[in-house]
Amino acid sequence: KSRYNRHEIRKIPDGILFGTATASYQVEGAWDEDGKSENIWDRLTHSKPCPVKNCDTGDIADDSYHQYERDVEMMRELGLDFYRFSLSWSRILPTSFPDKINKKGVQYYNNLIDEMLKYNIQPMVTLYHWDLPQKLQDMGGWTNPHVVDWFTDYARIVFELFGDRVKYWFTINEPREVCYEGYGGANFAPAYNLSGYGDYMCAKNLLVAHAKAYHMYKNEFSRTQGGTVGIAASASWFEPKSEKDAEAAEDARQFEWGLYTNPIFSKNGDFPQVVKDRVAAKSFEQGFFRSRLPEFTPEEVELVKGSSDFLGINHYTSKITYRNASITTFPSPSFYDDIEALYDYDFTWETAASSWLKVVPWGFYKLLTKLRTDYDNPPIYITENGFSTRGGLEDDSRIAYYRQYIDAMLDAIDEGSDVRAYTAWSLMDNFEWRQGYTERFGLYEVDYEDPKRTRTARKSAYVYKEIIRSRQLDYHYEPDTTLPITI
Ligand code: GBH
Image (cartoon, rainbow, N blue to C red; front, side, top):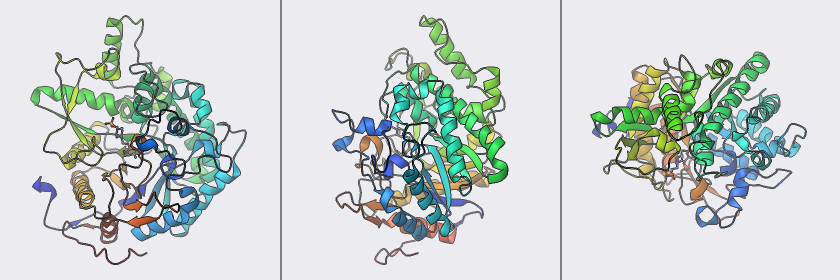
């Protein structure tokens, strides 16, 4: 533990970009304004009985659709190099398809991008952060192979509209959450609960959709626009409980993120061998005529392989992993039955307001080290990292989290990891999915009682600002929060 509480000031190498992130459904609000159509989170949050804590919705959220100038002002207060946000597909294309472009929705994103660029804050734009147009969901969403065309058409529109000014693109945020939490489980929209089938069908279609959009950009846009395109994967660290659990932990890593990163970043491409073998073997045992994991054709393997200029990583936490065949917790077939591993937390780990979020900075170091060695040191953008509280401006636990995790990242960089960017989740409190507004990730606090959704800098905002300004990590820096945070 003491390793991440150093006394000396640590210099941050030049060239690493610092930013914050949000996502459309979590901050924009204006859910049915100016021609936007319904998406799967509108549908889920409006369903009865309400599935979200306190029946919260993203109908208004942080009202960023109207408050974007204040958002950019906060970026300037923090001194950010970039801001990562996502586009709402159903706001730009109300029919889901390119036959009608919603001018007012496009205007909103143009205003936001132009306001940021005025102050030299680079937009990093995610095309898809979980808010699929409902109409596409009615046709199966990510389990329908036609989603490849739907997504590529949407991507073309977006590159054409914003690519003159946006130079950093992420196709999809967290494929694992899209596919597992939405189709395998029922935690996120569309809450299909088809574990062991839906999640794998989604995984294949999503990767092909991503790759097609990537190649389209490379072939048709990169010469004139000169940007880069990648994907943002969630990756927790899975630590073996004891030596005999090394294999269980590695299996967990390959199922939980290798499923999405191996096809793009490994030398041979395709789903991880252990995932292919395990799901096929279990499927036959279970009486299926074929593996529940769809196969890529050889052409698809080649298409997906290498289809990213960089690897975006959303990292928050770690889990203890072990194997015990006598404990049967999961229905069969299911994704977790396929993994054949069990997860636990070390009771000494500090917990955030989110019960899944334990503070384990060394797990971040181990993850970065493994990505470096497994995937031949790809350029890495940390696209999300952050800590939740129940609110309040004095957030020392968040400050401690950021310091320790940045420290761990610097350890990996010192050993050769090619980390180019670090993104704090989040700029401000926002709609935390099924937890509504009960779990707060913001550097800025948002007042949800106030119709104006007033934002106020937390202590962590002052500290993050100083890290960026000084390019130093100093555990002893104490901001004077009686002074306003200024540009
Ligand atoms: C990210 O997901 C998202 O990209 C972002 O939108 C979100 O606001 C942020 O993290 C903070 O949560 O409830 O025990 O079943 C992080 C990955 C996946 C972590 C789902 C929580 C649910 C755990 N998340 N997981 S549980």
